[in-house]
Amino acid sequence: MKHLDWNSEWPAPAKLNLFLHVVGRRADGYHLLQTVFRFIDRCDTLRFSPRADGQIELATPIPGVPADSDLTVRAARLLQQHTGCRRGATIYLDKRLPMGGGLGGGSSDAATVLLALNHLWQTGVPRAELERLGLTLGADVPVFVHGRNTFAEGVGEAFTDVELPVATYLVLNPGVSVPTAAIFGAPELCRDTPAMRPADWRPGQGRNDLQVVACARFPAVAASLAWLQQQSPSAMMTGSGACVFASFSDRDAAAAALAVLPPGMDGWLADGLAQHPLAEIV
Image 1 (cartoon, rainbow, N blue to C red):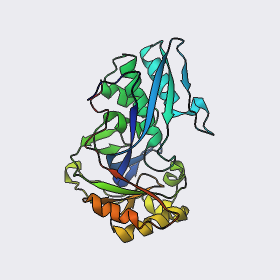
Image 2: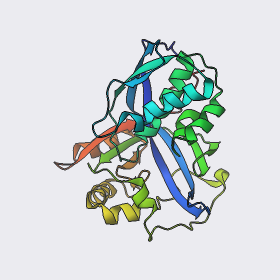
Image 3: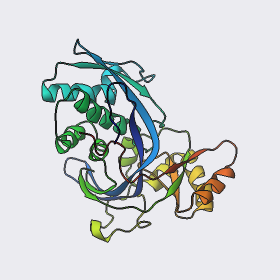
Image 4: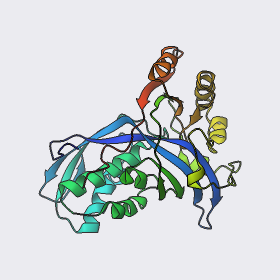
């Protein structure tokens, strides 16, 4: 991979859940999941500049999100605390992925901060250790640190890597922010889908157990999914919503579907990645 330094742009790609089953619930309330994460080439991007005062500053705050709550700031401070690093950084975030869209944008941003600053500060934390740190920030952070398309289990931290076919995805953004906690907390959520062995999963297998709940509570999600399923019956929601997607083995077919997107619907194409763009960074 190309050399990355303080002058570089650092990608934070989106993910799609190619299926998402809720297979149980722990005594502490956390849901036990099985899912396949696939990275796509739609990304937020981050830049960093060094600081000698040890402070972490987000130069591009998200409206309504206090700096102390922002995952990028929390990730940088966590790495400082874990390593005793006295260096600081100013973070510049170009936000392209929708918040509350089920694409993992905030988690991906946090993971890129961990990977980038570990490299730039030369703190030398192994990737597996960064995964464990990331889990304290959020359930989806470890997979972005892990950097491989993978079958994930548990609360999303146990990985069995998978090879996935070339695919182009048509992704629709219904334009609503779906709160993850509300979907997982819904009493009608199916929580007993039978577990499968990672080795038994094949592309196209499985559903999203959260989809029924999100569609019932957010009509815009249901409308986008209904239209997309007319183009591709296997279309589904990613994560806890709101975005929905369809997989095409032929990019021209995906582009043809995008071309007939009704006015008022927001959609775009993204290619599946063989791995995270920072999968080899150390």
